[in-house]
Image (cartoon, rainbow, N blue to C red):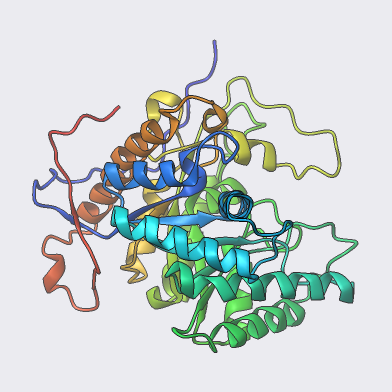
Length: 389
């Protein structure tokens, strides 16, 4: 008999209030379909129709849109970030978003940016980053996500000083734009040197820039420190709940809410039978699970089992009051059907609505507008009659 998916940490939220106010809810464009099969404009329309107020602009979606725009409008290929074609495409995409009433919450991700040993690789990363910064004001967003470097350890350094210097330099450049751009650093669960939120926070603290903060991702944090898709139990060890409690308490004590620039939410499937670890040494251990088996929050009928509720409770307890945004990779996104964006947008909204509602209920925040320190640029009302499965 296959083992049952382990349950997340226990909690008993009070009855849901029909007039519950929630923070702005967003979704990454990558979570609405594959760029090979689904147009970015269709994804944005699906997000708007489902009630999302923002989208995270995924790099592959942007590049596919940019290049298609360039081909259709007589620009030379290949494009480079910041060139005439990318700027013109950014203006057009911004118009699409305005027409649909959806904001771009951030550009993501800047991959493999910090810690390079080779000066040529370092310069290439910096040039690419500057090109992205150049188009961001046109896109209408002031936030960029830099995830921790996943390049081989032979090509990069884990030096705290080097990472902080690289991120500090990027933040200083970003601050010169109008409006000033904020940079957030995220610990990727399969990164080479920094795979835990504590390690990313260490860099942010050391760099000490006002426009440099954290991106917290429930999947990346829990996949690294709580879950194990290669274990029959789905957990790293028997005492992971106690370890998670210590980590969440540390998060609340160490990280001010205002230094969290975005909270990304995702669950993942319990693997029964367990997955087989990759044998290719160039493939990070957690990447196959991360890329193929994430789920929207609380999709327990599909095997979701991570303690996202406990992570969300800690994020709220830091004082964070910004947007919640879905970042879900899954093989289902590669389906070629035209309804994929709509279906995933609707699934995502149901899961995120419920997860956020329950989290704020547990925090006993019944009157958000009267709570000191909380400010929402937009709200959504949860309809308790809406179906969820």
